[in-house]
Image (cartoon, rainbow, N blue to C red; front, side, top):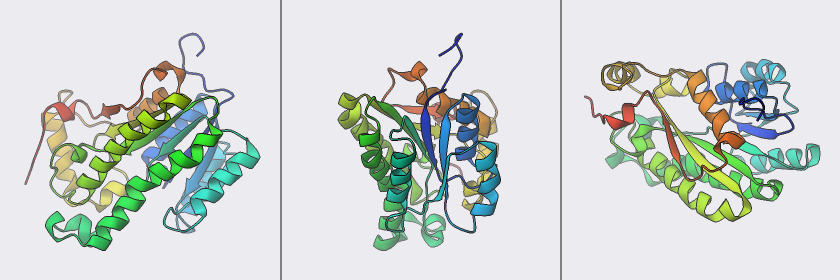
Length: 262
């Protein structure tokens, strides 16, 4: 901290699953970079790489690797690279979420066991895996942050299987905070409001959600990616040194109103 400003100079951070310039992971990475942190960025696959490579250069990323958590060894390779390059890690930002199209668009009642398990492994258990791999690199403590959404708390139409999955993720945040706190590792989630990202484009009637947010949120507006990124910066910094196990809502206050729309 310097003159009341967030300063991450000398800190190292991993941002997992940057998709493009509109993704919330990139909004967070941009804030971390602006605060002086050294960064490692990952992208999903070769299809995503051309969109993310220019961003990695802009952020002066020391490590830039593919990371599909469904592929054996890719997440481990990222942490091996961090260990050999820096020998330590100060913070992680996890922004991975996935569901089969038929399970995302269909009723939870009809979700297959295989589809549910896949969504849980990719969207929730990957964060637990990250915590396990990060722990030995965070010898002086650190911060783990993941992205959640209001569907973890209340029903949001058209989110279907992702509701229970995000609820599990938020519960995992609390259990990880309990377990890792004695190592001075803080674990939190950002419950971000509706932001027009590539991931959001897969949600049916997403424009209705944006409109409902504008009508019902106390601030009478949606939030933008930069607001989520600044909150991620706060949680990674010493300004939030006493915050762990928290679900921080960055949603213009929408979560206090509740909503089910048809």
